[in-house]
Length: 113
Length: 111
Image (cartoon, rainbow over all chains, first blue to last red; front, top):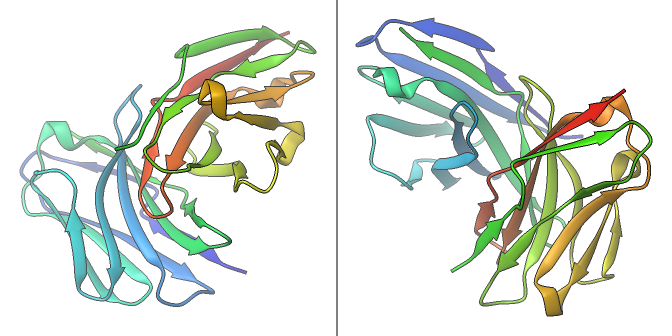
């Protein structure tokens, strides 16, 4: 069966520091991968999605970036964090089961101080 | 373009009462529809999905949803709420590739 991992689970970082969040998927190959952000009390905002290695699409302008160095690895990065980057970051992968269905990881809680 | 609205950002029900969470969508193509549940500090878990095979879809944890094309709705129901149902619920619409999530409804279950 497929599983998705995210780490770290929780992160507290100062403003201006760099960021690296990692997401890996097991049990599938060539998945579509997604990064979402969920700000406190708000819905899901799609940040990036990837259909393959090195292929990244960005949904919103921001100081975050994403990379996909391996088929089942998706990384979210920033060179300098802002206070507004605080939130709950969710990685998801999708599989075609009659239709494209998204499955989510456990999330990373990021607090920027 | 697709969109999803969820009426009521917060719904409270008593334990044992009917749960009804509303979802309306707009889509220029026949939609695929989903309900997800999110417990505190966890990721989203798929509850059920509509694939056009049947208008009444049964999901996990006793939830079900009915697709009504004429009303562009996909409301989520459960006959009897349990304390463990307290969570945030997200409706989503897809055209087969692109997902759009609703803003979510927080369900509280009162003893």
